[in-house]
Image (cartoon, rainbow, N blue to C red; front, side, top):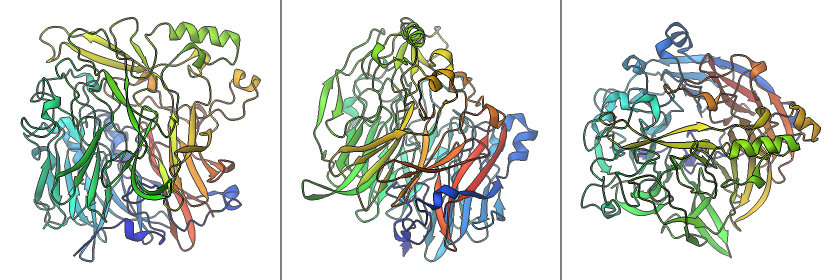
Length: 640
């Protein structure tokens, strides 16, 4: 018998899945924190992640920011460092119990943003506690959770090489495991990041790694099925590719899937096809790109799907697994799959049938002017809930704390082509201003939901990005055109658009109506113009991470890294000391009203998803901090 951890652990104080449970709730049942206790939160311990010394001594092992979120099982935390080193940690003291180093970093720099490892997977197999870890060089490894020893009976001596489980083998330096696999229906379904076309200074090439999703038997590690993305010629969805089906890659599962163990359905949030901003070689809607795909976890057979973005040109891939919620709409109980998106929409479906809970209309969108491009004439727009973030750009949206600031913002705006949501990329001017930008809207931080109330809590932000299409020099790239992106700031060091710059939005998914929305954190409140306007909280300028209990919403804004200055290798230009950081804090809000109840300063910027657990009657919230030039640590805050 296989017992999958996650759903059965509700209420015991454990945090057995990266997203809290397999429904992606980011919710801790039986939370001990109260409106009074969060006024006196305190740092309980700090744990320096192994590998910090390796990065310090070797510039080639410089990590991206620390996004490593631990799991908690019966008082022990299991965590992985950006370089892929796995640790067991005492949940009360923060002391290390064991360490395993798979040495995946020896294969060299991981693609896209470099070394990232967000979490592990925990599972109980026939009474044996197991950890599944992904490595920077594209392997899965199964470990004994009690000792850290490799379980050599699984896979090939405890390892599965994900580079060979595609329709064709792929280069190891083009893929990495940055997100933990999910176990559903007795199989292990991995997430695999694939080199994005814009990253690492490498132009797109003909056979970009495909996004095929395999599944492996939990007990043996043997592959049991593979879902092809893009589809193979003759398979379902192939007719949505007028050209480019056999050459196009990506359309992969890089973020975490969600699983309904009761029905045995796994929900895959799929990515953008290569290359991200130009699709002249891949005419058509391009299924299964930017699609929510529901599969029978045991067989890999498709149950239903919904394509969120047709013929993607904006890198609006699905950044997080759907929230699987049981809601009541007009007196009818519905098992729902609720998908938040970078572009600021919430798509809600019956998770068994795929039927939209509220109507989704096909809305006409503008075509562009790039030679050879194909433009989808419509995009699907949900009627409910309302968007939770600004969509598109106009002069009315510009920051206007002073008349001079508004005029300066107009000059910046007019450098770009701008307009409604889904305005396509262009070669003209400084490119198209994309709002929300390629980081969201909602991002990989995801949303939280309370399974008892049906309320969804969505962190979001609205940093715009400019997308510029350029013609490639003949012979240097498989594609005639490629796109580049860069964040766009506003006047006087502030964002381009009006505050709040980021928000937390509570949405009652029983009605589809917003309950409340508040700024996510303080933001740049010390700026003279913000002070003069009397604004006490304007929201951090980056995304926020979230975890909830019945009564409290905990959030932490992403620490300050220079999105405007990301270089082609993907290293973060991150502030090296706390005084230069935008915001390093944990906030506690009332779940029913959004009122701020308490806050605590943290020693470094938060860059990864929050988690919470209870041991010996004490509730902790843990934040991953640092990385990219500062030590990668876990900071545990006692909240009761």
